Length: 439
Image (cartoon, one colour):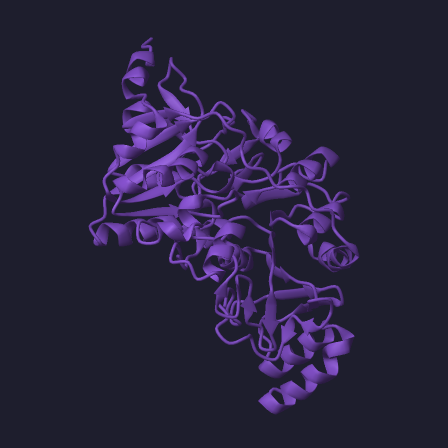
């Protein structure tokens, strides 16, 4: 049996040398969220003198990085991002020319951007975290994200892996052979974590309206945050639930341990948690490590609506910022200001509705800014991104109820949405609907 240790040593170098070996003009695709390339992203600004125009493509930055937040690096670095995190949001709001948003649906995010880069003649570099090498097999593992990472590796002109002993080994389409890798650097650091958000009273009320829409044997896609956590807490008495989701979250472990999730009745990949990335706590990452019950696949597969639809009784539960009276959903911007991203919301919403017995659910609090603003609005704010078009919308849920909009007229939609708006805003919404000609 071959030992790949010598090959590894030949490709191993320091972080600084690896960064300075990159072309002065290039597009560097880094890992996503919990698998963001913390070594590269935290060090690259120290080598600004080496670069003329370096584009760094990332998704949901969880940490703070000088190269995309300090205005002194304008013109040298540009963070092109599929889904804004807090630091990107702040840099964009400040007007720094350091970050650009890439409109996308998650299942096409990698392939579309890679194709655009190739059309531009860009040199593509992939730089992402990985487990230590299995010296007998020659394989690394990509850990808890494969949204676009494997696609980028296959398309890249240069592949650099940032070996981190804290990266868990995850079953699925996640293994990279050392023969595919040009350079290896070592950078041991804890993976980014996000806390478990306990639901408040409003989230719990929203969850009470969602839970009856989820039957025994359903396959779930659930996002993260107070509302999804509240929903999960109310599903513990369900039977034989399954998971096919873009993001694996802590609440799924809770439902598995309660016996509600078994994955046994799934139409597609029975017996397996199927996901494309995971984001949570260190305890969750340990649970996923070498767990044969999980299957991490590429985002281009997991989030393809036609794949999602192969799961009978597929239930997609996502959140939103605002919904207008015709059913247009905005989940990613505040007016023209990018707040987050489309992610997989439209993918999963469409896939669930194509599923036999499936439902696409959009949940939101009825108000924002301490009750002063209704999130059910006559029209979306000027410049708002439409994340789910009105012709795609299915169920809308607030703390005041759940309404089914599919196949309804604009007047029927307006009446239904006003019925689940906050009572303090219903009169104004009714007047606006009459002015707009909906009622």
